Image (tube, rainbow, N blue to C red; front, side, top):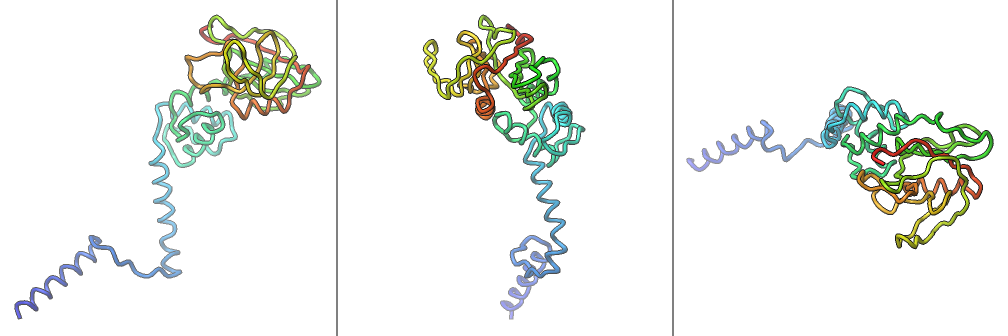
Length: 249
């Protein structure tokens, strides 16, 4: 009898634990009605988890403002608070401009790139009224393509000559092109090479583009996707306009 009472009490305690959620290992079978009731709650939990996994960065509000101005990266709320939509927009922006890691954190590099792009004024480049013009804003370290006097591709980020190797300013023309050009002075392959004066030209960057302490030996370094785009649009004789001055040079 004593053994039966012990078993009965243990069974009762187990039932209480399960009912209290401490042993929820036997969920009720899901029915169509049950799924309908729980779906909104599940979506809300998923949304909160996504936002939590994407931390708020030091420059959250600034980056939100720049992305809103630039447009094209999704819905952004300029409030300095990370959200699922903000995170997705920042990640998309980081992937577009080769910023790593592309995790949605509004850090110094993301802020710098977004700020430079937002500050770029395409009207400062005086393109040819007909044909293609490659524009390079040395001050903001940005570049874009104009066709028949209008913006053909939106500004992107570049890296130009470091101190002692400033990229020259002026109006030039592309005079040599090669998908792969060997640089004798620096022993490196230059992909999507388009020369416009001396040994200076456009090409795909050979290192991480966003290392601020780096600089080229005068060339205009581009992300791979941009270098390919410029090469597909360019040809010998295309006009190149460079203006401004890279900070620190």
